[in-house]
Length: 603
Image (cartoon, rainbow, N blue to C red):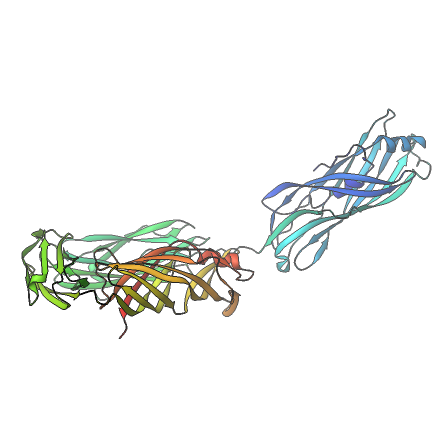
C-alpha cells in the first residue's frame, strides 16, 4: 500500500502516513484495491495550521465470513514533505526526521464499532540540504479482526483524524532545538467529506446442503406387447450446493418384477445430474404398476417416489380415441355457418381402419361432415370437420357415428349441438365459475386458482366484456436467503385493473385480462417456527399483469357447457413488500409463467 500526496502546494509532514494503515489487511477472498481522497488540517510548530490533502489506498476485501479472522498486513506509506517544512527543519540544524503516526479508524457494523487504530513507525529519514520537496517513508501492521454473527451485514471502514509524534535530530544524533525538535500534531479531518474507505459484506458461513430434483413424478409406458420391452429415463439433479449421495435405487409394488432399473448414479455434484433408465418388460395381458424409489442424502427429501405403469397386450391391436366426446357449435345467426373439428386418434399398437363416418338424427340437413379418415397408424390421428348451418331459430342436434375395427369399441357416437338465432337479441349474459392453477416458473411452484367471471357477450360480433374475480390463494415456494434455500408459504390475492375483454367466435375463445398480483403475507419456517419475512397490505406488482388466454387449438368452447383456456404471462417486480422485497422478487417474478383454467356455466 502507498500513500501519495496529491496537492503539491500543501504537502506537509506526516498526517496522511497513519491514514494509510486503514484495514490494509483483512478478509479472505475478493480483496481488491480501494482508495479514498481526504483533506486534513494539521497544526505545526512555527508555521501553524496547514491543509493536507491525501490519497489513502489499500487492498481490502469486499466480503468476509463470520468467525474467520482477517490476516495482518504490513502497511507501507509514503508522504511528501514540501519546501516550507524542509526549510523550517534546516533552520534549527535538523538532519533527520523520525517518529510515529497514529490514525483514528473505526469499523462500523450493524451491532458495534470496532477501534482499528494502527500505529506506523517513521524510521530516521534524511532531510536534504538542497531546496525542494522530499519523501518520508512509514511502515506498520494492521491488526486482525474477527467478525461475529451480530456483525452480519454491511461493515463500513471509516477514516478519522491523525496524531503525529515527530522527532527531528541534528547531525550528531541530538534532538534538534525546540519547537521543531520534538512536537505532536493532532490533525483533524475537514468536515463534509465521505470518509468511508470500504464497505465489507459480513456473511454467515454458507451451509452446504444437497437438494434432490427429479424431472418426473410418473412414467406411463402405455400399451406394450408382451415379450417386447420399452425404455424411458428419469433424470436426478442436484440443485443444492453440496454433493448429493444417491443411497439406494429400488423397485417396489405388486408388479415390480415387470420393471427393471439401471443407472450409474452414486454421487451427484452441485449443478450436475445423472440418469436412471427404467425398462418395462410386460408379460401376460393387463395393466401393471410399480414404484421407483430414490433414496438420497437430501435431509428434507430423503425419499422420492416415481410411479410406474404399463399395459401388457398379447398382440398388436388398434385402439380408437375420439375427442371431443360431444361437440357444441354454439349460437349461429340463421343462414350462417360455423365449423368445428373432431379428432380420431389411434392409441393402439396396430393400424386402425375407419370403416364408416355417418350423420343421423332430426336436424340432419343442418349438419354436414367431411373427413380424411381411412387408415390411422399407431400414435397418429385424422380429423372430421363438422359444419352447422342454422335454418331456423332454436336448438338443433345430430349424431356423428364413427365405425372402426377397434375390437373393444367398433362404434363410437358423438353428439352434435347448435342453436339458430334470428338476431333479435344480440346480448347474452353469462356467469362462469373458474377452477385451475398457475405455474410460477421462477420458483418452480404451482398456485391453485378459483373464482368466477361475469361476462356480457355480443352475439353478432362474438366480442365480450367481463369482470374477473379470483379468490385469494396460497402456495409454497423456495426462498434463497444468503446461502440457504428455505421453504416459504405465501398468501396471494388478485385485484382487477381493467375489464377483461375478448372474443368467442366459432367455438374459439380468446381473452385479455389485466390485474394486480398482491402478496399480503410471506412466512418461512426456521427451526420449526413460522417467521414472517415480507408482504403487507401494499405489497403488489409494480404494474398490472397482462394475461392472454385462449382455448386450446382444436377444442370447442361453448356458452352452454364452458371449456378450457390457457395462456402464458410475465410477472412484473413487486414493490412495497418490506426489507426483503428483492428476495421475494427472486421467486415470484419473471417470464414463462403459465395458467390453465376450466370455465363452467353456473346455474
